[in-house]
Every structure is written in structure tokens, then in C-alpha cells.
Image 1: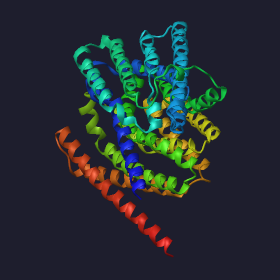
Image 2: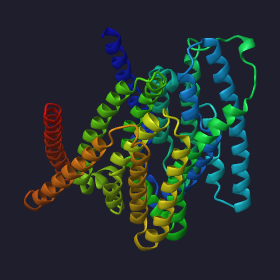
Image 3: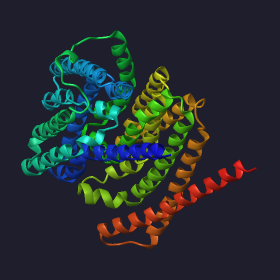
Image 4: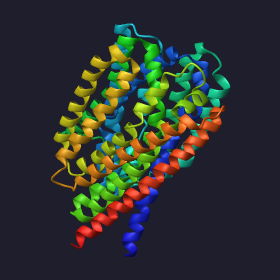
Length: 481
């Protein structure tokens, strides 16, 4: 019992730490977005978003599946000598792939005569070359780098406020963000000593075909997932222009900040799930699964209801004037918080531990096809709203496909119950908020934001609490029939 409690406590600590780590990764855009939105126009931010998304795609190529494969491989090793040997060789592969992707990316920039900001963004690939977060995720020790990353992010945030003053400094803004990524990644090396053995004989380069092929296979769903974001921005840019990309990016950026915090906690669960599957402790794994599904449902229900309630007040406060078109993007995109988190958890917590790699590639490809088709159909008519709808629908499609391939492993009826219950609560709260706004209004945006934010939180929290109580009563009755 003591061992079980210690295990659960460690998992909780890692989940909280991963959430904080992700928050630190997003702290620069979180704090600086209102300031940057007032310096640059949606057009400038659209160019930045398009270039960053393409560079991020090449970053994913350069990581060659290590965020998944590396974490899983490190989680399976208890011997420090073997861990040193394996982690070093995985990092060497990462370095080689990073240089290849860097030169290939810049070659495309020259051939296609792209904007000079693409040259700047290419250095993001080299900065990410030092990202060994997969090592700490595998060890369930991601919290080790929290303080150092906090210092790095604070310095980057201050640099933006002090140095960025004009719309002509877009490239310099990109440089500051890249340096922040580079310094944040470097801090991870300062805490390696307790986990690896610094002896020359352990740092020998060798390549096994299976390591490369397994890692590459797990890179494919990561590439396909990244292509969903990249394709949305590229198609939107070509069909509607960079202004619409800027509108779409500002709305989706806010969602990504919220989504990133919750999905990062599922990354902390992944090594534990892999261990439980390897030990054939399926009952305990299902217990973790159900608890996390409850967490996702309650958090996403409260958050989505809140976003729908306050979006019209939040955007003018957060981004300033000229960004009213972001409001529907934020409302539509808020549903990514639910389905995006479900997808990350089902992938990291279930599909990868069960080694359903082929199924993962197929479902990721299907989701990509859906979003590309929807973008071509909806963007010419709806612009950035079409991109937001395409992104949400493709994520819902992915959730359905994940549930289908996992139907033999888990009681997926529980996911269906929580999803429909959450959507019903969101709909109910939204109707009550809309009706209330007809009778209760305030002259101040801040007062409206606070009032309807609290109103939405109380309603959605109470209804979520009732939902959980009802489910417990039903399960109790069924077990005693």
C-alpha cells in the first residue's frame, strides 16, 4: 500500500511538473502576445506564423521521432551504463538529422525566393538540436529543469518588452524567440550528471537499423500532426492572404497555450503506461486511464464554457483593437481543448504503450486528409473561420478513429459518456450565458469579463460535479444488481 501511494504521488508530481514545464515553454507568447499584437499588424503576425509553422515542420523532421521513441526507450532502461550509451547515440542521430534539415530548409528558401524571415526561422532547427526533453520524460524527471527554464523565459520576455518597438523588427522578434529556445534547451544538459556516466568508453557511436527504423516510424504521426497546423496556415495564406493567417494564428495561439498545459500532463503519464503494459498490469493501467479521462472532461468542460462566455470581452482586452475577427476563431478553436487533449492522451497513454504504430500512422494520415480537404472547401468561403472549423473537425475525426482502434483494449463507452455529457454541459451553460447577457450588461469590458467568467465557472463546475455524482451512482447500482 505504501509503495502504491508513493507511485501515485510520483505520478501526480510528474503530471504537475510537466504542466508547469509546458507553461514555462509558453510563458513568452502568453505574456508577450498582448504587447506584440499592438506592435505588429495581423499581416505581420501572419507572415511570422506561416514561417514559424514551416520551420516547426522541419524541426519535427530533425527530431526523427525521439520525443516518442526516445522517451519510451529511456523508460525501459534501469542500467546507467546502458542508459548513457543509448541516450548518447540517440542524440547523435538527432544532431545529424538537425543539420540535414537545416541545410535542406535553407535550400528551399533560396529556390522558392521566400521572405527573409524564413532564413531567420531556420535557426530554430539548430536550436532544437539540443532538445533532450525526451530523456527526462523517459526518466519521469521533467521537473528538474523547471527553475532554469523559468530564468531563461523571464529574460526572453524582458528582452521583447525592452527591445521590440517597431513593426520593422519582426526578424529581430524571431531571433529573440529562437535564442530563448536555444538557452532553454541548453539548461537541460546541466542536470544530466546523476543519470548518465561520463566515461569515454560509454560515448561510442553506433547505429542499429532497428533503432533508426523504429524512431522514424514514430516520427511519421508526429510529421502528419505537424502538417495539420502547417497546411492550415499555408492553404489559408495562399487562398486568403497573410492577414487571415494572422487572425487565425492569434486565436489558435491562445488555445495552444491552454491545450499545451493539459496535454503535457499526458506526456508524464506515458512512461508509466508503458511500464504497466510491459508488466501486464492492465487493471492498474485502466484505473489510470479512467482517472485521467475524468480530469480531461472536467477541465475541458469548464475551460470551453468559460471561453465561449468571455471571448467577446477577452479579445479586446488581451489583443487590443482591430482583432474582433479573432473572437469566432477562439470560440470554435476552444473545442480543441477537449478533443486535442483526448487525442494526445489516447496516443501517448494507450496507442504507443500497446505498440500500435501502424494504426497510429493510418489514423494520423486520415486526420491530415480530412483537414486538407476541409481547408480547400471552407477557406475560400469562410477564410480563417474555415481553417478553425477544419482543425476542430479533423481532431474529432481523430478521436473517433483512436476509439475505434482501442475498442479491444478499454471500456471506451466511458469516453463516449464523458464526451457527450461534457458537450451537453457546455451547451447548457452557453444558453444560460446568452440569455443572461440579454438582461445583464456592463459598460466596462473588465467587469463583463470577470462577471461572466465567474458565472460560467460556477455553472460549469456545479454541472460537472453533478455529472460525476450521477455516473458514480449509476456504476454503483449496476455493480450491485
